[in-house]
Amino acid sequence: MILSAEQAASFHRDGYVIVKGLLTARETALLKEISTLDARLASIMSVRLDATGAKTTLALDNSLGEDIYSAIVRSERVVKSTELLLGDEPYHYHHKVSAKQPFEGGAWEWHQDYGYWYNNGCLYPNMLSCYIAIDPANIENGCLQVLKGSHLIGRIDHGKIGGQTGADMERVNAALEKLELVYAELEAGDAVYFHCNTLHRSDQNQSPNPRWGLICCYNARSNSPYKEGPHPRYSPISVLPDTGIVVAAEVQLAGLKSLADA
Ligand SMILES: O=C(O)CCC(=O)C(=O)O
Image (cartoon, rainbow, N blue to C red; front, side):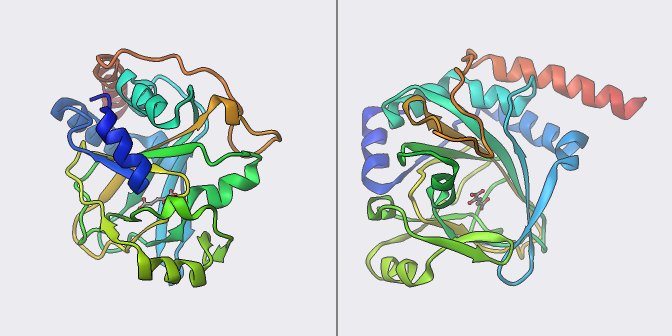
């Protein structure tokens, strides 16, 4: 599951690449079960209102622990793929669970992640995210949408839209005239790597199904921020063999189940 040279080339051309089955069926099932039971995750969920006031929820972590989310961030397949895409040693910038609940999950407005990461002292747009589907993500439940090739536009000015930071819609509308809008429909366990200047958004979830995803965000070692910001400076990732995801998950799940039984 380490990306091929062809997949890397399509990431550089299109600003994103979809990877089917990044996680195995067992890893995917464990991620779903753990994220559903995980009281700590629920406790750090914060709400960002979209332009219409609907709730988008996000649980963001700047540090790595012993849990399944951290094991995926540290997994050889994801770190090596990210290294190929960034052309540099990747480090963990943060990771987050983006959770859209059935019928009420809000939209994400058009933005580039570098639209705001720029303000954190990162000089270069050599950063990326890997969205891993915890639930199937489709048009009905508000999957990620990307504007193909928009990373080549460069950074667009951003401002406040509801409780979110959104891109200047005059530019976005001009880009929409020229570029293809792609709905990144995923099965659980599939992933999409996308460049930090790729314009992306997602719709409200008006379906009866949840749409949760784990988003792993990486910066390049040589792009460590020149000033203090909300996310960490470079520190090396202790890379985990791919088998470490299930090992970490089983320990975490046993702990969650014993808490539930107590
Ligand atoms: O979960 C989504 O649909 C998008 C989330 C996102 O764009 C972000 O966290 O920057």
